[in-house]
Image (tube, rainbow, N blue to C red; front, side):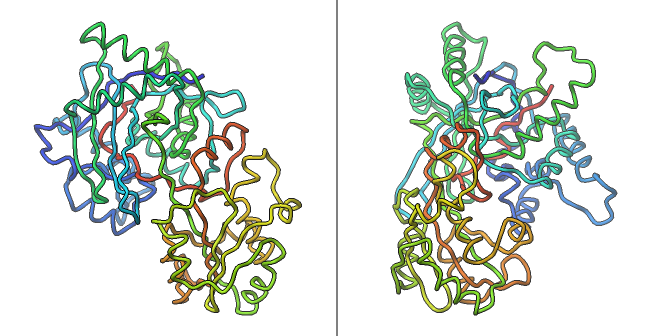
Amino acid sequence: MPTIRPFRALRYSREQVADLSAVVAPPYDVIGPERHGRLLARDPRNVVRLDLPEEVAGDPPDERYRRAARTLSTWRTDGTLHRDPRLALYPYEQAYRVPGTDRMATRRGVFARVVLEPFGPDAGIRAHERTLAEPREDRYRLLRATGVNTSPVVGIGQDAIGRVAAWLREISATAPVAELVDDDEVQHRLWIAPVGEDEAGDVTVRDVCERIGAAPITLADGHHRYETALRYADERRRGPVLEEAPAWAEILMLILEPIEGALTVLPTHRVLLGLEPAAVTNLVARLPELFDVEQPVSADALRAAFGAGAEAPGGEGRFGLWTRDGGAILRARRGAFAPWLPAGGSAVRRLDVTLASVAIERLAGIDPGAVAEGRIAFTMSAAEAIAWVDEGSAPTGSQPAAVALLLDPTPAAEIVAVAAEGDVMPQKSTYIYPKALTGLVINPLE
């Protein structure tokens, strides 16, 4: 079972930083070049200088990571960042509009330290996503240089009794220590539940840690950072270990409680690139091999059925297809897919994203090797996917978009089910919204 611990976070000093919205940032992996530039220009103390340090012309190798470490040291010395005096848990709330709808949602969880465990069938921390070497190496070099977790991984916890949910609701009725609205109009609120101020509070913190740690936690976001932390901890163990519970053997995690912290998962549509017209015609002609096909279907109908505001539950084997010759709605005939499904448990084999991967390889000849070479582009927007095809855009380089395969979102329960069976999903299976902010709490590994 996972071990959950309070910690002393580094946080921006409100005396030094009046507007938190100017210094926080999304996680590094959703920041494109344009947004990166805006964040750098917004405030010289923006956390992006620590979490996604700028590459400067003429830099020697790894200089940007060393620059992040120097910046962190300066901010700790000049008071930009201060370390909280007591161990604490940090309850956190996000209130947001579900993209493409008028529906408001609220998600609550708690920032804590979690003791690192290698993944495995009996581990307390379970993965659902396959990672890539390049971002793992980037995060490792940054962690080694700075010695802090600048942004949290996100885990789905369990508490069958409901004590954690009740505690989060009670906390949310009190005044937060930090509050802001980000660029996506998501409202973020943060509280502190300290250890050592009174006995009742200490009992509550212990109980919350025990309740969250009573069942395995499934990683929802941040697999690259988690695997990086495992590598860093293994490296540190090769030297003398002077502490019984070293901080470098733990990681900053936002643990979402399943009642108060329900996930919003957005779909990730696939756009096939570089297919010649004859290949597109052949793909469409072969659709009945795997699907029941409804056509013709207009672009407007597909945007309505698979757009961000669609209320489809997902997991039902329904897809949209768009080419420059028109559209279709596809419903998978699961028996037809059976010979081609990958090894693994029933959860990963029934995923829509697994069916999509099989269909793309069987009907378009785009196998995992071709995917790695950039033959598929990904977007959360059905409208954008359709537009790329209509315009012949080249979203990843030089190959034009030819076919859009639109998906429903992966249900959150399927993420947990895949991880529980020890499997991992295909890449780009889930997009968790909204992202946990970087910079609200920083975890020093000391």
